[in-house]
Length: 187
Image (cartoon, rainbow, N blue to C red; front, side):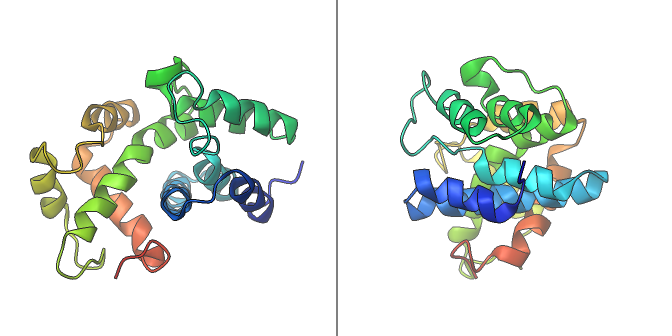
């Protein structure tokens, strides 16, 4: 099985065309790679999970279909069960696939958080992650009208699953995304 990033990217773009979805995939990939390095895990594997986690979302965004179609496509492409299950586990609240492994818990915790951190950076004068601090993210966190599409309870539940304080997760996501801020349309 070819678990290369190039192959995963080709699969992603064969099902996704919208710039926002592709940027989100890149953000989650970068965060997953960062957290894999931090945990001494397989960075390539975790990165591919991050890249492919929303494989079906552009075509199948409904609760009934999201992650289920991706699982079928990934199986057809020969991806191993650990990749398929991690992709499904990021949607635990919609499909009941509870995250068990560290990789599954991490994708669950980071998916929504990457989007929130980017949203905070976008409203800053610099539109950059380079000067973004945890306290700025936490201030926006309290504003329920800000990025109301981000389910903060999922992020909190993910932090709890990982046994990480929310502030640490936020800081690490900022660190993870800084090297790719240009690709994300920031900076």
